Each structure stands twice: as C-alpha cells, then as structure tokens.
Image (cartoon, rainbow, N blue to C red; front, side):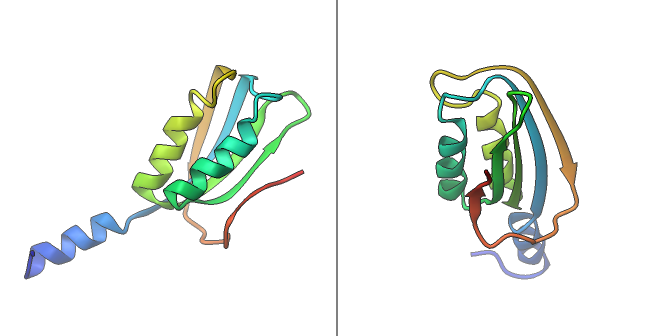
Length: 106
C-alpha cells in the first residue's frame, strides 16, 4: 500500500477520465459492429453510444476511465469478426460525464 503524497498522484492517474468520438469506415455495417461495441463497452465500463450512419460508417462516443476508453477505441480499430475497417478517425474531446449507460442509437 502506498502512503503519502505519491499515493495521491497515483490515485489521480488511475482515475483519469477521457472522451473519444470515433468514426469507423469500411465493411462495418451488417457485421454486428454496434452490438459488439456495446458489449465490449459494457465490459470495459465505458458509457456513451454507437450508431450506424447513412454513408455506411459507424459513429460512436465513449466516456469513462482513460484506460477503458483507450481499450474500446483500440478494439474499434479492428471491430468484430467479419468487419473490415478501411479508415478510423478519432477525436479526443473533453470529458462531459453526460451518459448513464452505453446504448445503441437508431
């Protein structure tokens, strides 16, 4: 167990939060990308949403502990079996704490 000033710094690092807004292009619709994104986000403890876009891409917003958001963003770069990601864009935004859960938007 850590004590003193160093433990406070470690606690702050561990509790760092982040927000990522991602756009995934390629063969990402019709391959259960949204359902698998929701499942993985819930496993990582990430909140936000995912949706299909009219242009065939998938868009998502993730919020949570930085390490968890990093993990779901990393997962989205490959996606589920059957997906073929051609382009992946991520915009790191200020954490807003605006979600209670992770959902699929329709």
